[in-house]
Length: 287
Image 1 (cartoon, rainbow, N blue to C red):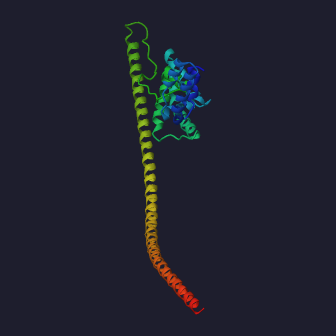
Image 2 (image 1 turned 180 degrees about the vertical axis):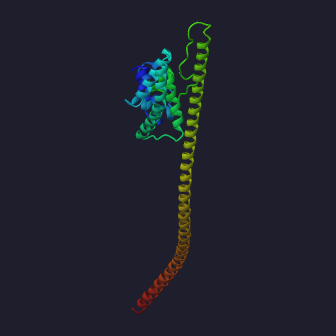
Image 3 (image 1 turned 45 degrees about the vertical axis):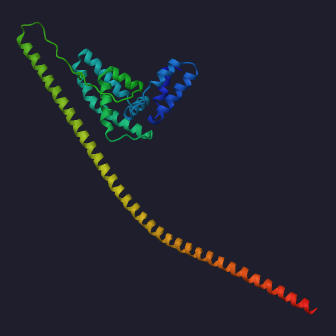
């Protein structure tokens, strides 16, 4: 076994099993005589829940491939400065990222680990980073993320190349106009994306608020039921204590009376023995 095999095995597990399994595997590897590998295994970090969810989706064939393929095409178009290919990839990007976010969430739920309502933004940032950045794409593809990713660099967009030699003022102004237009379009696109993200965050926050409001109402109902039950049990306990006190009093009286009766019985038996002895003596004297 090497580190890749160990990492593949561990990052395929649910987060709550990761640490125990990692430590056990490191111990087993050390016992087998490979202390260096054991140290590397021990250094593997438990994935955050969102990172785990993306890892599992990456391991499922067909879930993230369309998005990762789009990222490859987008980066190739950027390197080639193919404006048409960039525009086409940009149009696909929003749709495929949204679909991939849903796939990650649904795959996690199918695995028995539903994600919190605020997880979508971290998933989207991670997948968006994989679209734009080749290193991030490779991290997602390997399925060994420990934390969500984010990308703060420039988004690939076509760059307008200068036309011909200096001195062609008309073409220069036209190029500048195209650059300014491209910049405005990028600005509008960035603002639109920011608006979409803000609206999505607001919708998620509202869903979270509504969910917690429902949870609070259910908790209030449960609390009322428990209070009523406690009051009922308290009343029953008070009655039971009264009956216990009465039984204890009865027991004390019975014990006391039994002791007195036992003393009286002993005295009566003693008098009977004395009377029997006297009778026997009298009979003997007559004989």
